Image (tube, rainbow, N blue to C red; front, side, top):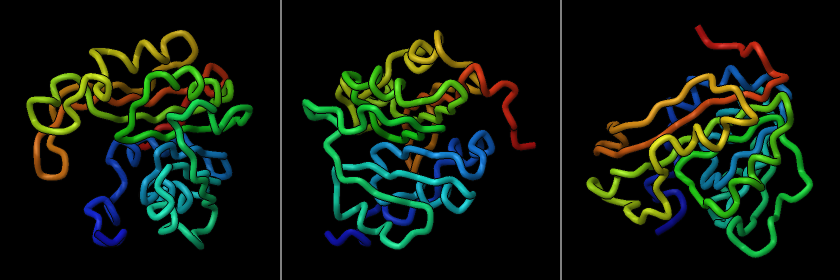
Length: 187
């Protein structure tokens, strides 16, 4: 299958990311983790963010070539060495990706005034299809637990939704660092 015939190529940004994009000010350095074809990287760059799109799929990232304010990095996010060690970001966006062994590393990349926008599949999704492996499904309230001690939750949801024409169980959070209070919200 060619990259452009992939069903994920050209998808609109997640409504969750779009809804909370106002938390990310123009000029902020943003990490789009497991970026795939870059729908969120493109969207955030169009809003003025400086985005690093990271994924292991070089062909998917290649679709971002020439996109203003977007740089790409091919990296194995699940390897022995953490490819983002020592870096800092003003915001991190993750959609449809979960690798628990790197959660602490991921959260350490966010500055004190940083933003986390995260959305992925949760327990119960196995009734509707993939992913169905519990290693790739968030447990009840797991995103809240990750951010509880270091961030202020702006919004959190978990439950069954319609996603790309079928049902799925997801969990999503938008959170900010203590130094980012009060957040700017879209009307």
